[in-house]
Amino acid sequence: MSSNPSAAPAIQLIGIEKKFGAVHANKNINLTVAKGSIHGIIGENGAGKSTLMSILYGFYHADAGEIRVNGAPIRIPDSQAAINAGIGMVHQHFMLVENFSVLENVILGVEGGALLGKGVSEARSALKRLEADYGLEVDPDAIIEELPVGLQQRVEILKALYRGAEVLILDEPTGVLTPAEADHLFKILGVLRDQGKTILLITHKLREIMAITDTVSVMRRGEMVATRKTAETTVEELAELMVGRRVLLRVDKGPANPGDVVLSVRDLVVKDNRGVTMVDGVSFDVRAGEVVGIAGVAGNGQSELLEAITGIRKPTSGEILIHGQPVTGFDAARLRTLGLGHIPEDRHRMGLVLKFEESENSVLGYHRAPAYGKGMALDLNACREDAKRKIEKYDIRPPNCRLKTANFSGGNQQKIVVAREIENDPSLLVVGQPTRGVDIGAIEFIHRRLIAMRDAGKAVLLVSVELDEIRSLSDRILVMFAGHVVGEKSPETGEQTLGLMMAGIAA
Image 1 (tube, rainbow, N blue to C red):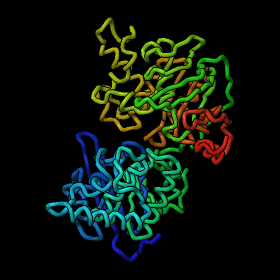
Image 2: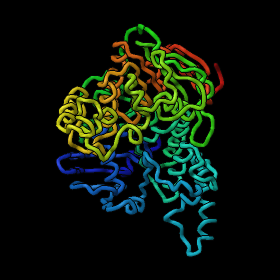
Image 3: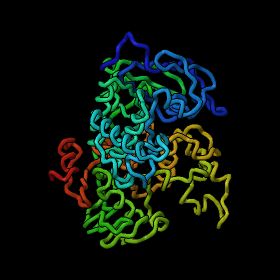
C-alpha cells in the first residue's frame, strides 16, 4: 500500500444526506479515503452505496453535506465537474458505444483539435503509454462489440485514466467477469494503486474485499456503520455488519435423497441466433430430490441449454423429456403446465417487466390461473393479496406491492422472481445465476429456499458462474466447455480441478 498518512485524504465525504421522496438513501455519511489506497464499500442491495458514489460522481446532488478532494472543499454539480476534479467511474453496465473502436470510445467527448487528425494521433500515443504503464493492453482499433466483457471493462478504465482520473470508482466490477478475468482486474488495480491512484471499489463479494482492499467501509440501510482495516477484519465480521445479524456463509444441507428421473436431456444440439452451435450433443438426467449444478465459464453453452429446456429457444436436434414425456420444442407457457419453474439468468430481460407493479410481476406467466381472475380479466385485488403474502414470506423490501418493480434493488427484484417461481410449486426448477448482483443476506435466503425445494423432493437444475455457489448447492456437478459436458464431479472436487475442466484443460 502506497498511501502517505501525512497527505490530505484523496476523498472526504462529510455529513452527506440524500432522500428520494420517503426513502432516506444516505443518512449523515462520513467517509475518508486515503490517497494511493484501495478502499472497499460494501453493503446489501439498497444500502445506499451506489447513491453515495453517484453523489461523488455528480449524477445526484446531496441534500446536505460536503465533499473534499485532496483536502479542498468542492462542488460537483455534474459528472464533467467530477472528471475535472480527477474522479473517474467505471459503471456496472458499461457506457461504451458498441460499434465504435476502442480509440474512438476513449477520446469521445475530449477529442481536441478542429480536424481531429492531431487529436487522434496524440490520443493513440497517450493510449499506448497508459496501456504500458498499467498493464491494460487492448487493440485500439478493435470494435467494442467484438471484444469480450473483460476487455470492454479495460476500455472503461482506460477512458477514465485518459481523462486524468486520480480517483477511480468501480461499481460491482466483477459481476460480469470470469474468475480469471477478475484476477487480472485485481492485478491491474494493484498496479494502479502502486502508482499512486486511489480506488473506490463497490462490491458485495466479501472474498474480493479481503483479496484486494486496504480498507473497507460497511453501509447498512443508508448509514455508514463501520470502517475497518481489511487486514484486521474477517469475512464473518463483515457479513454480520452488512446484514445486522449473524449470517451463515456456507450452505447448511444434509445428504440428498434422489428419486425418479424428472428431467432427461438426450443428445441435445442448440444453436444461437447467429447459427453457431452452442450446445453439442449434451445428455444428462436430473432426479427428484437433487440439485444438479452446471459449472462453466460464461459463453460455453449453458445459457442456450437453459433456454432450450425452458422453451425459449428451439433445439436443432436431440430430445428433452419431463417425467418421461417428450417436450422438445414446447413453449414456456406449455412447460409451466407440466410443472417447470424457471428463474432466468437475466431478471431484467426475461424475469420481470420493470414498468409493472410488484404485484403484476408476482403473477407474470401464471396470470391466467383461476386464482388471479377469469378469462382475460385480471383480479387485481387477488393479485395484490397474493403479492403481499409473498412479500412477507420472502422478506421483499420495501413491502409495497404497488411499487413499480424498477424501484426495487437488484436483490429484492431477484426475490420477486424467486418467490413467483417457487410458490407455484414446480416439480422441476431450472435456475440460472440465482444470486447474480445479489447481496449476502439475500444470497443466504435464496440458497436456503433452493435447498428446501430439493428436500421437498423437487428436481433442481442450477447454472451459475460462481464456483463457490455451484460447489455448495449441488449434489452433482456437470462441467461444460465449448458446448460439451466434459465431465461429472462431486461437490467435494477441488476448485483447481473444476477450474481446469472449465478451461477445457482436464476432464
